[in-house]
Length: 386
Image (cartoon, rainbow, N blue to C red; front, side, top):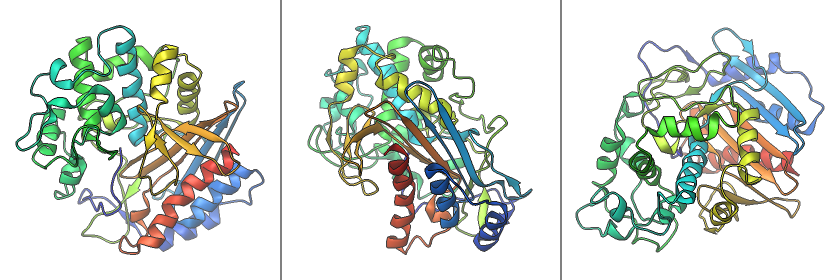
């Protein structure tokens, strides 16, 4: 799930806070001088202000390097360990997209058919012709549907409430469309709410069950799951995630949070190693037909501030690497967590997760510093893929 940099959502009134300078002192005391490129990058992210950073680099043959830096828990001072569970945010879009494309393969969803034909009046809104929106446009963020997350930013407690997908969609549709269907790319979490509803309609099962039965179980992912609304916990072992409260100073523990405002757009919990397994299986054609994967890799230019030159396919992002190659992945933000991941041309997969979003410790009005800190995560991913 993508959260704008100005998001200052509320925390529980009983949450303990940690001044940013104290985090830096803790991390300096806990860290040791790294040796590998990935470890250097993770240490650099901690030095930039993230409480913890973990990463896994997996070769095509399955060889794995999992590393960590910083603190897993600011209250106890526990040092971060590799490959712990975190909230993966918008990486969930890849899971949702795979299920949609499997349903396309089965003839149960029409990729270039309209959502209106399959779910009449679902996206109807006053003053906008959403009846022409297709499944492909939803997958590719070219539908023009407004992003419900923008509306949530007006309510500090919204990200902690159990909110049904239908309510989120209704909230989105109170805002005018950003463009006509197919006119331009504009990232909107609303697209993946609608796709989740389409999956449930076409399959007769919940989105969570379809993701589990079609992806998680076949790949034997033991520490990956899509929690249901109201399920606030992350199983152990995990890294605690830290965000901010607009009325308080310091980092606030956001680990136990209702995930329902994410759903099909960002409701996945996993580890870097298991996300790499999923990504490699997807890009090697193990989860969809060859034609479906080819469709997923048909891209349009995307206005991506954090990775210039990025293009967007059907739930997949295409990145230009500094070594001249390319990689496919996604990435996601959720209060307390940020993750970036990709698979390069030789099949190497890398996932890097940090336990805060930059606005938690960078002044949101200092846009250059904020953007520089966001880009440090993508730069670390780029270096590890090179």
